[in-house]
Image 1 (cartoon, rainbow, N blue to C red):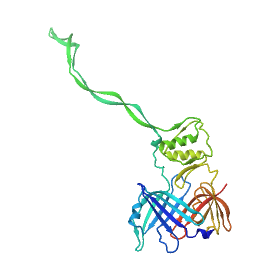
Image 2 (cartoon, helix red, strand yellow; image 1 turned 180 degrees about the vertical axis):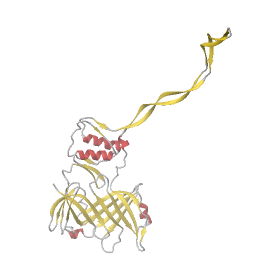
Image 3 (cartoon, rainbow, N blue to C red; image 1 turned 90 degrees about the vertical axis):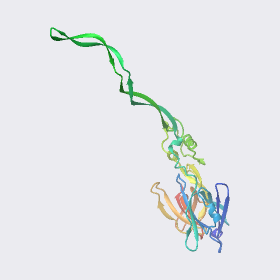
Length: 348
């Protein structure tokens, strides 16, 4: 089969925000012009992976399409399989033209899927108001007044001063004094989204996603036990959903440009066997994932986009024969034969 994987045709389509589309074709037959290269990543993280591409000897018309926010997709066509999608996403950044004296290059970075990690916690909180009491000191004018008072006076009796009292009226002048007064104001606060006892995590996940605008293409949970004491959501929406997904012993990740939640019980079957006659380039190497403790095998082969995140494939080297589930990898094209490097966990 490896002969049928030689000299594939690579395609790149770019769609602008106003609907215009450009398609580029890299024909790898000898003598054909090189139009672009790429390194397209995939993994099982809850944030979309970033990838890189470079465009060679671009015309002004082509550079008009290389703008941030435009959609970009890469395809490969083999005689054995036909045209297949490698990766797609939205252009995030475009670097200035690089020139080495012979060739011009325009590097870009694109993200495979919409990034929801920056959506704020307030998007799923309910805005409320309450009255809050405060005190302040104010100046108060007190009016003058005339009051009846007992007046003390003296008289001379036999050469001596003798004190006496009589009823009279005295005027008290007005004045300003400081008075402590209480007042209330309406204060805005945000209440966390909460769920009652007996509600299932799947309901909470759907509610958080709807309130925040997070688009999840499919949801499968390994467990979906109701909350025993209710549940209060905290933090950013994507983090809150990911926390619930882990609680349900499942995984949230991007498959191509789609955000998915999966129970990991069944992987995508590709029926691909990687051996030295079908595209395997070197003996797979072993490593272990320090976080999960899983056995991982890294294999390098011709680029086969059927093997993507969470897909099952079989690798047959000279010393290793394993059925693996893809965890992460990179599709690469540097102008020669397109290749890929994949880390796969042993299928359970």
